[in-house]
Length: 127
Image (cartoon, rainbow, N blue to C red; front, side, top):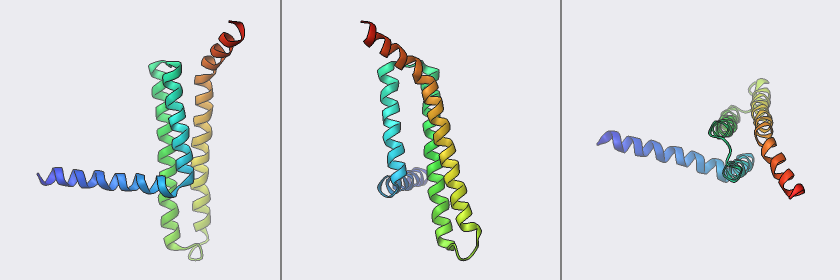
């Protein structure tokens, strides 16, 4: 029974972290919005299962990168930039991680969705 209580408490903490990110992190909210749009496109275009899996994994990669960035920013904020000159560099490097994950995810999304949009455009123009 104690294990179930601990598990529920752990889930509560996880949801608290998600709530914090949604309420306080603008970029995370934007990424969630884009993620929901991608999920909608997955269903609208009825993409292949493997394509949907890749798109979902890419979204997860961006979300995890953003949350990791947030955690490290908070840790660095505790240490204060004046304590060590690398504090700003750490924040910049983590922002670069998020940027790279977002750019790669966009590229993968374009590669996967391009044929579906091309087919839709063809149907609209030639029907």
